[in-house]
Length: 298
Image (cartoon, rainbow, N blue to C red; front, side, top):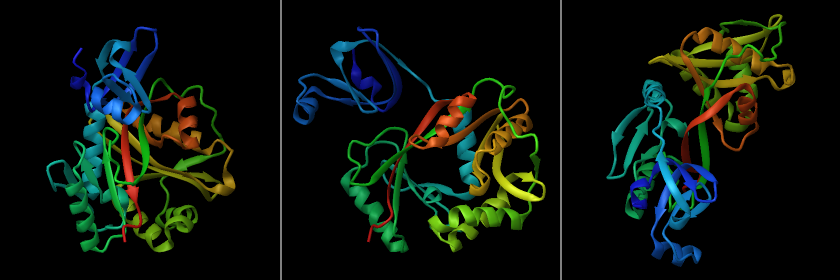
């Protein structure tokens, strides 16, 4: 079996012992495995697991859903421009919000060389930025000492008919001042008031928002984007003083119903609690993004 054909692809590996592993994989030669892991065998690395060649019965390549990818890229291009930067890096830039990591990052198509990374660092420093972010469809072998994370794309499987909601909540389009207030309360202490305001202005100009109201009080909100038969629900937020009242579930059910025949998807941090809630509601991982970040590049 030619294991190099599966390098940097999302796969499902079926082992002779009946186990299966699914995810993005990296091919490692037998020489590399012996020097790094003390294993004298050619291997595929799927997430944190090393699979020896002799353990594998068969492998299936899982193609990422192209419609979700195209919808996500279309949404990203509302805010940012993507351009070539080097052999293995493309640069996303948002000149209106240059200090937002997700809008100003480097997208890698293969493992960047050290020289490419240093050139990217120099570019960030020349701009006066204190951060650098790399993102791609597979984990890096050399992460250059950056902090790593994984963002999942989760697609709804089934209908929201059995979801528990709060029937005292009214869903309607929120006002600008109300959205700014709840965003500032949630994100201001984390990112600073100035950034929270500018980010909210940026989103409110281009995205459609929906808010959850208890009486006249805005207690939660989200924004969404629809294209190509898909609807992305993002920015879901619940006022910390109103949590544990099924506000998030009520907002999500409204989003699904409003999307109609569109397929609904959202994003979740692999290691954060909201992912567990989404899974209970029937959202399933269909894609993932590997992210590497430093907020102090000096």
